[in-house]
Amino acid sequence: MPSLYYVKHAFHALNHCVFDNILTTPKFTVRRLRGNYGYCHGNDNECRIELSIRFPSSRLFMEVLAHEMIHQFQWEQLAMMDHGVTFNDMRPLFLPYDIAVW
Image (cartoon, rainbow, N blue to C red):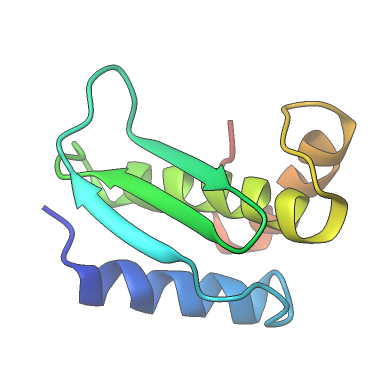
């Protein structure tokens, strides 16, 4: 189970390396999820990232966090979230850190 400390530490590392610290720190929830490892929710005032309490590997945890951080970027910078052009254009930014975003 990833602790909130571990989640926040990983978030800040990726925010610094990939996003040049432009993302605000979202509210994080680590809980049992069915059918997914993570979600990003946005509303007018905040972004919230929910992550599963169970990941089969730390690699998958980082991939899911990176995926949700792209959605957070979309929400904060573009006021939308999808898996279209913007999402796909950002995937290569994680390759230098050996993180595959799907």
